[in-house]
Amino acid sequence: MVQFEHPDDIPGTAVWSADGHSRGRIGAVHIPYGMIQPLFVQFPAGAPRQRLVPTVDAELRDRGLVLGYSDEVIDGGPTVEGGAVLSAGEAAYAAAYYGVKIDLGGAALTERRTGVGDVGSLHPGVRRLPPVTTDPELPPIVVINPGLHEGPAR
View 1 (tube, rainbow, N blue to C red):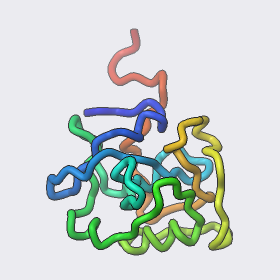
View 2 (cartoon, rainbow, N blue to C red):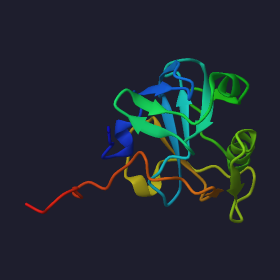
View 3 (cartoon, helix red, strand yellow):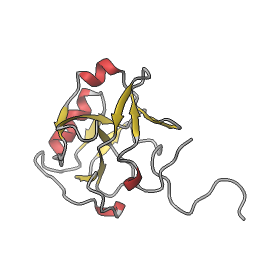
């Protein structure tokens, strides 16, 4: 299985629909403030309008990130401009399309965050969201903590 050691490693990764179709490469990830797991990926990289899809039910495999949604569902979903920084309301709207509930935790619908906060990234494709939580919770599928290794200590 492929693992990312830092969110900066995610943009440029191949992305696939649940039914096995290539969707291009990830252009950006959106990470709620205070978390390291991305809530959304957007793709295809370089396109003026890009699909915005949650990482809930996604799996990281050798060929790239396989989303938990079919081509048909993705094609009917929301799009954003390539350089989008999402507001809390936009994130909630996009998540609702995919059946993911977001708790805004008191954030105003129009609240936006710039920079990337706790993930310590300078990559323009790693973007911060206001502090939101999801139901179901995001699985730890994409980012690992550097320095942690499986197996016996050396």
